[in-house]
Length: 80
Image (cartoon, rainbow, N blue to C red):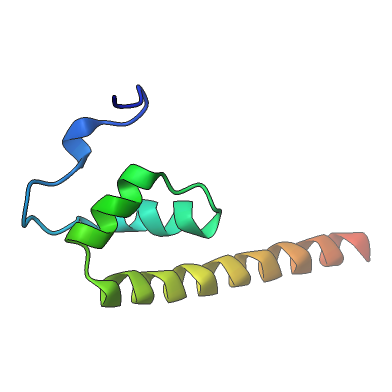
């Protein structure tokens, strides 16, 4: 049975590639360790590994730069 918070229409039909937003959601959820079994199965059956690798690397770089920016901002205001 489907969970109430998951939209069954979000799963693409057979052979339909994933959208950018579906891949971004999957990469973000996987990065934080909350990827659902259903989405993981969808990703493995409809996604291309190279797309997830590139998006994962980009997400990791963005996340690291965002943390660095937050730390720099805190240090800037702490030394004033």
